[in-house]
Image 1: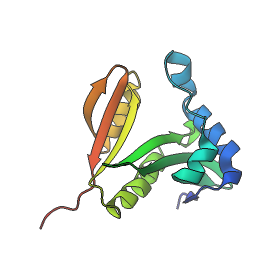
Image 2: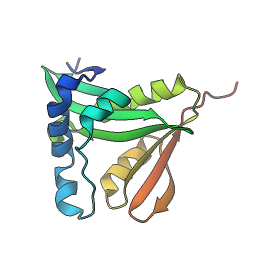
Image 3: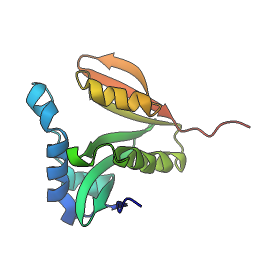
Length: 150
């Protein structure tokens, strides 16, 4: 047992989530000049979207922020602190979003990432995501969540 639990975020988690996101993106923010602010709007996201945190001993290890758009369930942010990487946290957080998408009317999960975040793109590819569009520095990835036809 890993001791990691997953739960819905509350407004009281805002600062801890911002810290988690900042730590998760620290290298990318240092190396990619045009990466947008990834920590703004967390309180608004908690109010308007689904925000799930991975927690161990009351410490937030990771977060996924997602919500329904007209044509898919969109992952707006996924972040895992460096020392929690390799423990399956990102996969479990993505599984939460995928389960939600399966319970919706949508057949796809989608997300956007920066073109220069090659490690991130590789991880998504390993988890079954496909790159469907590159526009400027943005890559759109997609994963089908449709139930197989039997």
